[in-house]
Image (cartoon, rainbow, N blue to C red; front, side):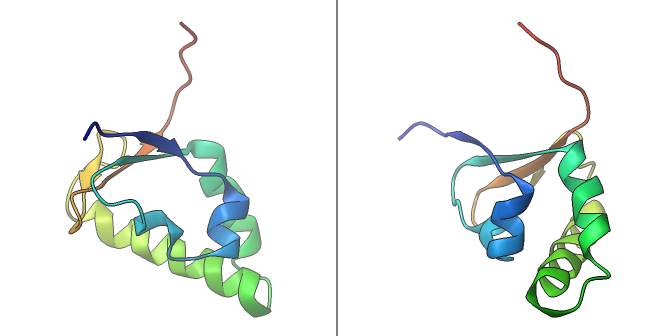
Length: 89
């Protein structure tokens, strides 16, 4: 089965903090703007703040395994990458 590239939006991560690692065998891409938006939510009370903090901690842990702008493989065969630049084709 072919790998898929999935672009995850901030709203998905705030709704389900585990969504970032829920796509085994595929490539998850987070645009840089998503990180900025998560930072704005991490001080909020309740589930939104909790989800934002969880995803930020998860990404911080992944940084110890490699460069997120190059892509880091996680346990389930999925890769997570931060898209730092947009290059139109």
